[in-house]
Image: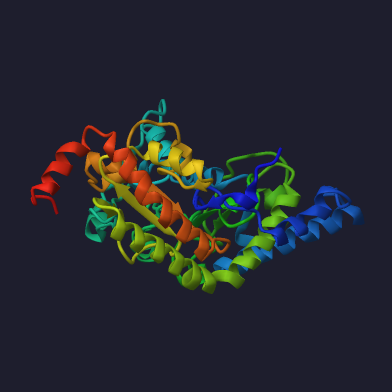
Length: 404
């Protein structure tokens, strides 16, 4: 198969990222010659075990944790489920969970299922967000109660990039004796994180969001936090997650974390600059385009823009003709005809929510790619609007001078 990756303009990095060449190089020995089981007693397996420990150290250093606080998992979803279910099993009399209306399906779907578990009814409070996607800390404080077992709030939203004040929220939870979990899948590697300086108890990472392979993740568990394993089996991961380790991918994740530490400044300068150029160009050249999310309290790589009176899926199909990759929301809800639950929670109008496109960049994007996208999109939107029954009244309004 030839995916033609050299010809693709890839701006869908919040869905998944290219595996860094350095990560591939680090993985290769463990897909060929170094195939021993890391739990084996012999030297051949022991060397592989040392590589897993080196990767654990690299992950810990990126997020300001201790190596023994790192549990390798299969993905961010497993990490999220493990943290939330562990807290509910630890505090069986506390059946209240606090989360938000804009969480990733990994948390949103799990919390929805908790309210219908036979014999284990749970109560879930889903915090609302403002029009710019931010949270109200007073509402959050009022949501905490004596029977709250855990709070689960994402560090940064996968669709809008809006960053939540999870460090402050975790401290408020700790003062009430409540555990705090954050899905940091989009944040890790893009913004500085130091878990030694906050009260977060659980944190989830997904390898394929920071240029490591798919199928590997991390759950950070603060030392001393009560913990119940999700997968029981062997003694792997200090008895906290059964199953033989996915060594090659774990090694790859470790190398990706090292690279992320090295490119953090580039994420917040070069990538942010490209994002801003794309965003400002689109808002300036396309009428009735709007930014979704807080203008500055966002990840440096993410821009969610609504083009009113057109369908996001139609925009993506036209972009695809030019090998431009973007998305209309979370890849985990792709195929749904419903508008984004994130944008609905923000109160984005129906005519705009359906025409929302998320652009998410990485260190591999270039200014030439941004220029190409800026050249193509205005004509695409204009063509689609001419076919939209919703655009004709708006066009007449603008022609009469009533439009904004």
